[in-house]
Image (tube, rainbow, N blue to C red):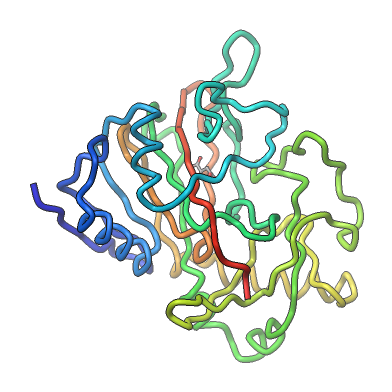
Length: 286
Ligand code: SIN
C-alpha cells in the first residue's frame, strides 16, 4: 500500500492513509509522516489496531519517549508500560484507570511547565463515546495565531517571558505533590518566552502553554492578566483551529510546541479510553 496525504480544510491538520502503524515502517514513510507533522502540525490516522508495545514502537520512530507528567494520584496509570499515559473517565474497583475524567480539558500544550517540553504527542483511541456524547478534541495553530496578531499585541508580547503552571492538569486537578496557587507571582513552573522561534524554519509562533495561573514576569498582576487574556482570546479563535471527532482506532500525532489543544466534556455515562505517548523535546524555547 502507498501512503496518501489529505490536508484538512482547516488552519492545520492532515490525514494520512495507507499505513498500518502496527508494523515496522519504511524510513521513507517515517520521513513523510515527520514532514506532514512539521508542516500541518497535526497528523490523523484512522482504522489502526495497536497494542501498547506497538504504540511504543511507532512512537519511537520520532525520538525517545518522554514519560507522562505527575498525575493527581501519584502513580502511573499504565503499570506495565509507565512510558504511556492513559486518558480516561473509566473507574474500576473505585479507582480511575486514567487521567482527566469526563470534564473539559482546557486549551493547553503538554508539559510546558518543564524546561524542555515534549516535541510531539500521540493519542490513540481504544474506546470512545458516541458522537452526540461529546469528547471532541480541538487543535489550534500557533504560527497562524502569531502571524495574525494585531501590531499592538505583537509589540506587547515581544521579549516577554511567562511562567507556565505545573500545579494543575488541563482538567483543573491538582497534581500530586503541588499546592494550589493563590498568587500568580508565586506560580511554580518553567519560564518561557511568549513568542517562540522555530529553530528549523525561523518562523515565529505564540507559545502560551496554559492559561490558569500563568504570569508574565515583571508586570503588575492586572497588566499580566490583561495581556494574557488578550493573547488567549486571539489564539483560540475557531479560524486557527480544527476539530477531531473520534472513532475507535484513530491515532493523532501533534506538534506540541506549535499547537494548543483542548477537549470537550462528554457524557459521564459513556466510556472513553485512550493511550498516549509523547516524544522527548530537544529545544529550549527561544
Ligand atoms: C489531552 O489533553 O492530552 C487529552 C485530549 C483528549 O482527551 O482528547
